[in-house]
Image (cartoon, rainbow, N blue to C red; front, side, top):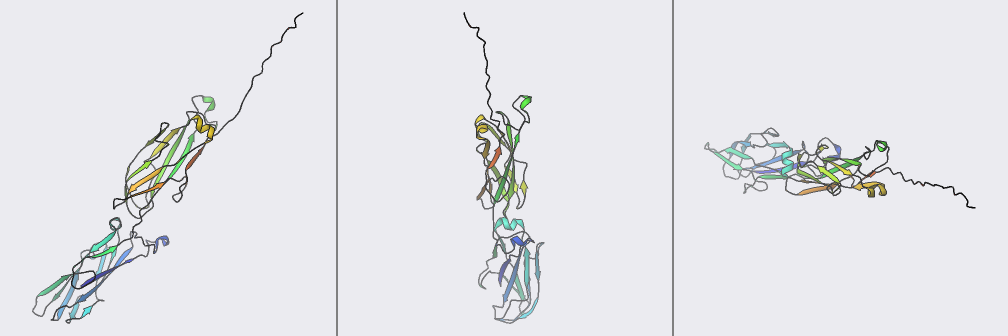
Length: 284
């Protein structure tokens, strides 16, 4: 028996992923079976078993084949389908095998494990599932205008040395596979004037996001104030099911860009001069 499969790339209900070559949960695989009588006697009551297709996510229909003459084949009676799960996508393929059985004229049973392309082998049928592993991070900032210890400069909209910037990170799994061991790097926040805490994120499913694990802060310096802003960028990385790494440079407002995050610092440039005088009595 030959068992073949076709990945039905019809999408998961979102027209954006219809026919994109990447498997999504809920898409299906259609199976066809070609049963051939390779012997010299007529076979009857031919049945088919398939553990995967008879399970919770599969369907198997048709049969039994009443009779099959020597050399004859049947490729229409049995059909099957399987609904793809996230575990299948993470694995990258679906592998399974069917068993066909028939009765001989003397009442015995002959059987065969399916092959994927011929009547002489017994190889399982593998269906490759397109994978798309990707990750994105959005980094946002808030200038904490709390003052430098002097209540007169708290909340005045102007940065002082010692005030801080608070950073938030929203990490999203933008691909089709589960990502694990997700870490974040940020050169500025891991430097002398910054803090970066949280992580790693143990696991993130496709489409899911995490905006609470990673947090950071930065203490403003005079150089920052003179420049008028603080600019920096983070890098997020995660491991794919096949052991590779995907990464992304942070963007300031979306998952599709890679723009650094700029935090504007209020500046107040001013100068003052005090002029004093002394009256000199003329001498006579």
